[in-house]
Image (cartoon, rainbow over all chains, first blue to last red; front, side, top):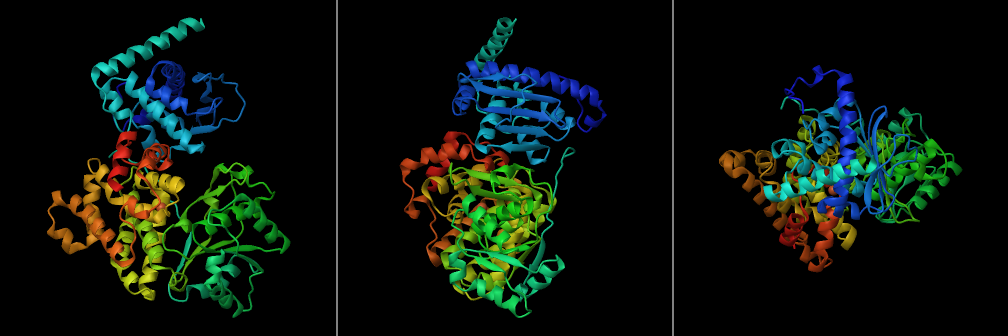
Length: 180
Length: 394
Ligand SMILES: [Fe+2]
């Protein structure tokens, strides 16, 4: 992750921000996919989404996006050319706002509070998606970073965290190998 | 904070005070309208509130083209379509909504259909689908609590699926809100108390929430002061028109605050109890408010401490040490609840409502986590934490 000084975000080139957000979206979708297979907390959230449920995170004007679907009880990523209407869409109003969130300078709820995200669709489902993302961040990020990336850092013992982290990364790598 | 950011929006004209209703004809004319349709419910019409409005119109030779008085307690799409057809049949050109939350939400839905066209409201559901100005629309609230006259949201039940469908657009806001003390004078004590506590909760939650901002704070603070200064007095003396107007203004100001800064966990729990056990919304707010403040205390000690000034006044605030102010603020709300109980038996606990059993609490806690209001609560509650708050409030 880049060392970014507070207050200097605007100095980062938009092209770089786009590149970074695009990379993070790919990473997050793959990690979320892995998490929905091995992490009990994410599994429990996904279990309550209806089969076939589609959600999207997008950046205005829409070229940068991540679309996921619940299929066979877990999350899979959908191709960029998916044209159906998602059940839930979270749209960042500008690439900078997505950059703030994905570089862990502003957590999702704060971005929503700051009117940087437009939520459209089923509200209870959006809460499940946000909680899954939060969980993912607490699992895959070092605690010091994760504390800024989520609103409330959960009570999570280090040993417990390491176990889930290893499992999630392991599944992530396994999925990569399988897809080759 | 260097990276602070906020937005504030309220384009609603306030027409408030003594003889405010007599300003409606001018408001209609200035919007080029002369054929209003009145949307209301049986209860409101039954106590003669609609007559006050129509008499004020008659006096200057203006008539409501028709009156639809059959809005159900939870607004429904079928009702919206029926009213939209009536509006078109009678060639109306504007809407006057007289009532509480359901009437106002229904009227917002009607305005979408009659302005955008079509019969299927579902086509406009979601965020930002309505993108242009709608027909002239005026709201006359008859309760002092929901603040719906200042929100850009309408929630309408789909009669087929039973789902509550949200419509969000800045164009849903009315052109003006008319606050006249005559409209709330006949409100029964328990409803006055419950809706007042709802308004108080809107102000408090917007003041301590994640989306608080300096402008909404100003509205919230004034609203809190007006409510704590007037609610008990109005219950003791229901015909106190000045006090009633203070409460109506407070409700609208709290509405402006929370429509910009949103609400938090009191509403997450309240919406869930409402959905599961059908306890009136304001009653839930009153029950949960101190318990949720307690839960949030660690994250917003300073903001809760500041509330004391508006809840209890400058003397109490000055006489209380900074460290003791948060606790004292919560205690002041608890005392207000006791006063409401003494004056009109507004329940202090879930068990006192007679509609909630202890066995319901787990499901309520589960539902509360999925309520959108949790998003901007300062702490993300876990299931166990939500359940613990519910048990304390039981
Ligand atoms: Fe409320």
